[in-house]
Image (cartoon, rainbow, N blue to C red; front, side, top):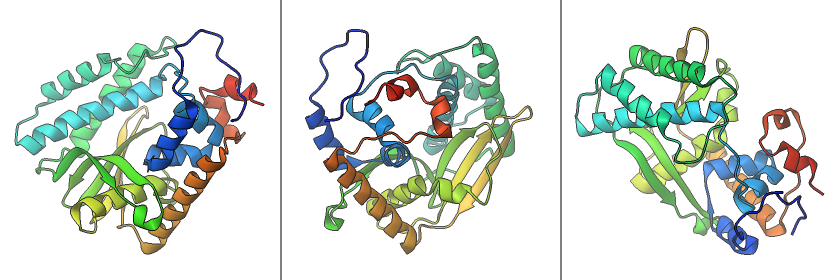
Length: 271
């Protein structure tokens, strides 16, 4: 097992890392796979050692927006009306929810709250879907043991007209030439989950970016169904994940992304 700096504060006795690793090898999600591919040591800190860090303001904004849109979509699925006031009430409830831990604020709480609400107002004005969704927030899995791979797990945020929809909050407008590639792991896994659980090919994938600008905007990127080449690629990426966990390959990946990493100090102390 890799030696790492131990937290200074006393903590409850952790679960056996070997058992945690065994469980991680049996299943994989889009977020776990993406994190392992970007930085193996960060994966180790988050999923094996399970070090807890306060939630960032950006994560809280994204989570609050996502929870509010979830409430909206569920109302559509039930055939219930959802007014702008109901949207705001759902947002306030989501914003005040810190059940997953405290948020690390640096004096910008009210400004961030205003930003999050303006994103939702913009989405309501520019998109405002009305048709009944096929599915909302459905936990699903796909058994890939026949390919020698672990079970894929995940939650499909929204499916409508056979199109898989995923929400993202962003500080800048997504580059249309890069957004497909940078989100390919996630979209491919969502496609696998959809096909395994419906027996059908998805009609496509839509990425709905809610962009946090002075004048917020929504950018919808429509992507085609997963190709055979993309399926082969995500299978190979999952193979790298499984083999890496078997080898306990948890080395850092220093780079520009480290500036905003919550495990920066722990990584610096790694040996």
